[in-house]
Image (cartoon, rainbow, N blue to C red; front, top):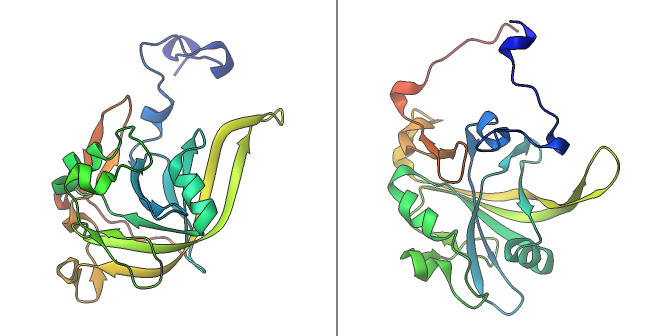
Length: 207
């Protein structure tokens, strides 16, 4: 591959394409479908496309929010949140919860979802979702560039203190990832992938 075969750009100078390829290249990305509650009791539910797991022991997950949004403020105030698995069957409802609405408007009600009480946190989980993690806040970190300049983005980390899994997704003691048909983010504003059993393959690690 030669230089002529490559599209090269420096992000600070623009990408020169119709759509920024950054989040299309880093794909697929798990969806952080986060429910939270503010200090006045209002419940929020919103999807975040920058989400992942970061530690086994203790189990820690995190999501990044561009701008200081309700989810981050709620979690800072209460120290709790829930991650809900977004599946193909729940895609339309998940998308509906991305709407920008007033703080006192429930995205659960907007999307026709059931706020179901959790065991260890006061935040409800999505009753229709087959998997949910109850989380306690560990850190909120404001991101910064290589020059030290603060970015308008915050990563919220939480320890998973309780897990809910639909029993039909467990076979011989093993969670069947693709059986849940999770959806993951691709590029642009509305591209997604669906994880299906026929798209999975296995490789034995060399250690």
